[in-house]
Image (cartoon, rainbow, N blue to C red; front, side, top):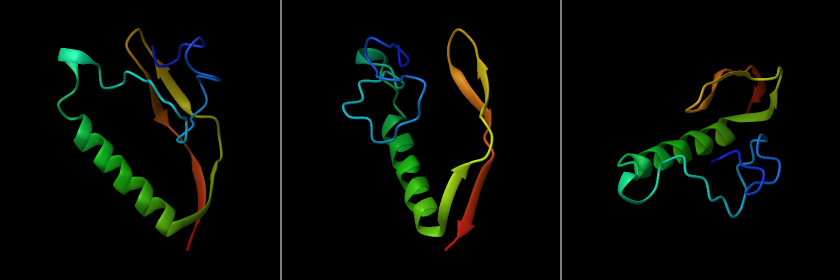
Length: 84
């Protein structure tokens, strides 16, 4: 559902600023993930810290993906950066 070309322009591209972003990564309705708020909070902390500490962040190699019927996960992602 999160990679549906009818819903998302370029669904395979990571776009942190995608708006609106009607993904269903945390489920929906009665099956909504109880940890969604914590996950969003932790990711916010991560990106705040990364952008405060690092500059010139770039992807060095294509990500190593693992796909199955449930999820496409990033196994590894090689990044380059400089410290501030």
